Length: 206
Image (cartoon, rainbow, N blue to C red; front, side, top):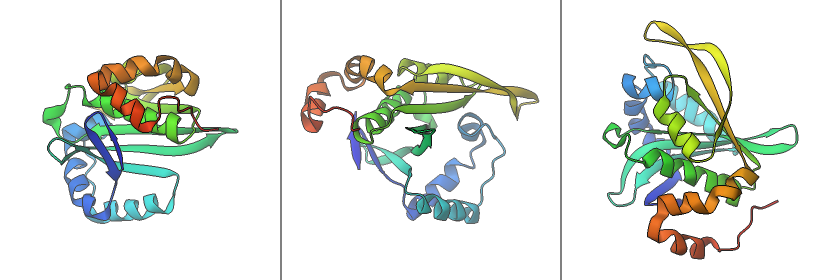
């Protein structure tokens, strides 16, 4: 498990599929996280996906818990890949508890994913995708140092029209340049304790 900014990231277990079944059949939630309001995933389909996910050790899939209440609030993932000879990952998250939207949880989760990716997994590049109309996600990504790299035009059809898919990415060295400011913004007075816990001079693995 990984704990950061009041959040606990624990591995997705088969018992969590009941919770995912609720979240991934919520049309509003899926409109923003999957760009598919009419997702309608069956439990059998989720079980098949879980079996495929667990076969690939490069996929790190998490249930995100609020440590204060010990309740699950969302899902997050780091899907590792090598592009050419550069180790990287596709990172993503959604907050299943919609009453927590726009309360800063997206930024906290995203910084945690970058900490794991760059400080513990030795990755050099992270990317994320978001549908054109999800401006809340765009703000969260950009506040964490991601840069918009491009657009795949007219790849999503929602609410009677076509939308683009926005691509964002961040390099390891870009993250390291802003890391302390990001940690201070999400950890506040807990930043020194966090750095002491993981090692204040820890450098990304090579």
